[in-house]
Image (cartoon, rainbow, N blue to C red; front, top):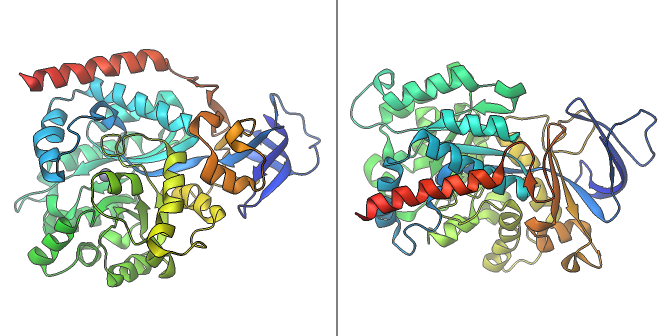
Length: 429
Ligand SMILES: [Zn+2]
């Protein structure tokens, strides 16, 4: 595949115009001159820009089924009265359908990879496999009581998931380990999980200091912040992604930097659930690695990574009163390359020779994209997901002109709606 005469985001997150050639799943050529090698499909790049695929660093992809369910409740009531009872009714088939719908949303916004934490991960993996998207999946492990990890049923599922799916589909699917959160696990579970992740050589996903009550509760329970506690348990000794980090202290930020933990910033979910606003300018100043996530569609309420990028890039100017904070190129890097690195995918997230061809083509032929004074700022502040014409993962076109190409999107939407209604009606009785 050859993108011809196309504006593209180079490895320094500046815009150039030229040719980008893809072969064997990788970017084989980037340059101003037409390459001499022959390519199959040619994509006319005029009035289009090629960007690295967006990476969603924190998601619960099947939660499309809970979109709009239980709005307006405080977090604890929303979880206990609505989310948990609904989730208890989910079958593997429901999760599979909800995942396909979520993946369709992700691909439509130019997202090529996501990190996920949920239940029924076998079915999520099947959905990832057939849809063509890339993902780091994880089974959320909880642990109560003084029970060894080896007797924890969720851990057994996590271990089986790693055995079966880690590195599957040409490495499109990887499996991380997940500790759901500090307040849903005890110290023994976290310590043994950290050891396990280290010996299995997989990364870790965890929710961290999402709400004030969760953060303060940990300090009360353990005499330490969640970040200090997880670090003490060894959980950050492996590659780790911590979602939210809204209430982390300055000292916590130093811990996160020291251990190289990536924070997945999820601004829409934090705003909608009234969790607060993460201190992203302070994290940047202290050198904490940042990536961008949507969280689940139940708390966002969509999986539109371009919208998330827009919100993340302007939100902190409002709180810091600093109009120079987070230039658009840096925001785009957070949403692409940094996300790929958070997944341990060193060869993803850049338009550069030798990197995996995870790409999105965005149309510039739209009223809101003119007159093109600055292409990166147009992508970050003006682009809509409906401008994404094509999403390519590992050199394969998986989304084009409003349709997922590798599965029947309309059928998935229809069947997922049936699943969601069935559960909602049962719970109403
Ligand atoms: Zn989450």
